[in-house]
Image 1 (cartoon, rainbow, N blue to C red):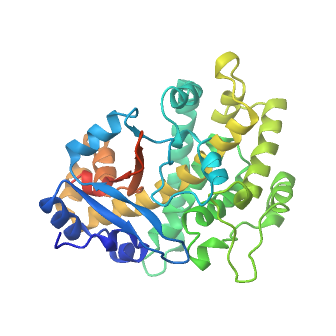
Image 2 (image 1 turned 120 degrees about the vertical axis):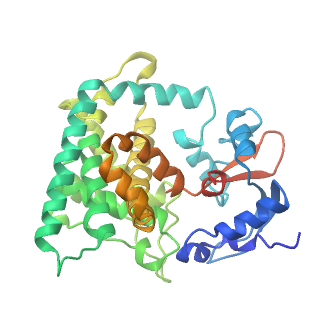
Length: 348
């Protein structure tokens, strides 16, 4: 193949945006291409993977978990470093196949009761309005940093409501998300925006378990349990509190379920990880992406302002156009190759 797919596995490629032109060239050449995984940014080399580029083929992969498994190799492009690390990530719903995936998804879906969703929607609207008012009041010559001043705080406030976390503890979510998603970036890997003096006793207790950088200044791999010991300590304390004194939040409802829908301690802690990290990061990156998309297409922005009924489909379209989670993998059952899914490419 004359088109080199190597830049797709280098995070530095995406600093200036998704390489749509490269993806288009690859797609025109072949529906599936092989991509090597060289040592990069302190990570060892990987086995490589097949990259599926066309929407119909991606859909077929996702519809056949028996052939293309989320569990066998997990869903991150880079394989877990050790068998123990793989076993750890397999306990998360994101890295499960049916029927295990459905068994965990069912109690989560049931926890978002109409009453809980209505309360959450009202809270999101109030938080969004308050943040906009604050930004307008604090704006310097009519400008603001949308990603920092709005897109960072809104998902933290929302997740604090979902998880039933005290509001002062919400910046723990910010730090946890930075550490997991940006663990190759020295600034993000040691994120410490949370002020322990402003937090609850549970938050301060959790911080006692926070991993420390090694002699080279690198934090432990956050894709391991030991790398996020403070998150798990907080989740454990939160669960104990919710079981003693449940509230109207989604996590309290989830923890109150019985029978086959009752979660074990490990299952709840891993579910908390998904909400706290994946739920935060996708929204925090999706909101600025949506804003950029609208600003780059002023005609569509004008339509949205004039026709508010379009908001119902606009959210899905903006997520398609600017996908917060760009790549996921599947492992062929009975094979060793990993199939990577570039959502942004598949949606174009």
